[in-house]
Length: 115
Length: 112
Image (cartoon, rainbow over all chains, first blue to last red):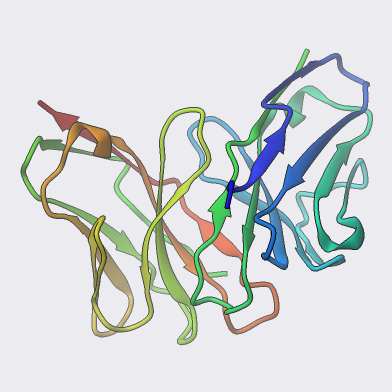
């Protein structure tokens, strides 16, 4: 069990560019979550996958954001035409199948800076 | 989604107990109460969770009020490594997503 991996750890981009982040969950976990966190705030829910199905998207996830989880394994989060307001830590988490009575495992996050 | 309210910051001395409070007055009957902590530049780390009964593990204890509108995370003997932001959150188990909803957290400072 190597935990949840996220890549890259840091990303600096210019406004208007597209960026893609990758998350590798714990292998036996079928639930995968993306969160966004800005300085001084708690993580905010973005979207959730159960296996390969994206079951919920937050209002925070504008049409410039897209997430995929092909084959129910790793996941990618893409931001198109980045804006300075997209600068944040993007966190991925995974969990198993026992509903609310199960903890989430978080990755170390991808810190995005949009210049 | 249930909202959680925590003090912005708390301070403790090393080797003393710490009681971190959380209000979650809008929590539903099937939502679990989860606590996570976060060090700078790291993702949140699970601490403990519970539904109705008090819970203990090697890291901490969780005391849940009888009406479930509040809970307290108890660190029995704080160490310098316990300095972190502590988040109280509810985990929706009544719907289909089981997402965690976080508040702003409590910054715990531990003095040597």
